[in-house]
Image (tube, rainbow, N blue to C red; front, side, top):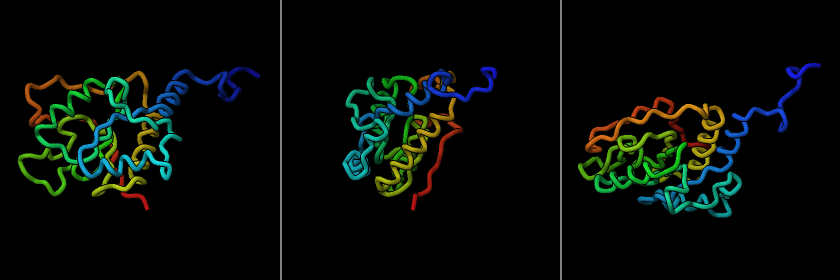
Length: 184
């Protein structure tokens, strides 16, 4: 019986799998609620939904301690540079969940003051639909992100376009973004 016949366990597991497990089990979200979707995001932290089972019970107030940004609500043109600055200050690797139709597409606010999709400012990994999406939808988005982390490569860095002079018109390319349907 050679080593190739052994099944992987905690002693013979690959380092890459252990790192992915650690990253998946300790995603720390940043506090970034902008509108009514933020109330639903706060509800996910309560005992009814309990995101502490995923190691995410503490929303970090400092972007330097967070690796997940949940953009919950509409993003105004004045808030867009602040959102980008918070994203740039987050540690690598970092992920973004766009929560709600206002964050994903601008929603009913089709005017000059609201950014028509947060993916114009930061690259989005998972889109959570709804107005506002219920806590189960956000949990589904978190579990989808965990699956992306589990199956992704840890040595590959996402493509980062050079910082533009202005944020208007810049659309980052992230082909692996997941668009969720509302769970039943």
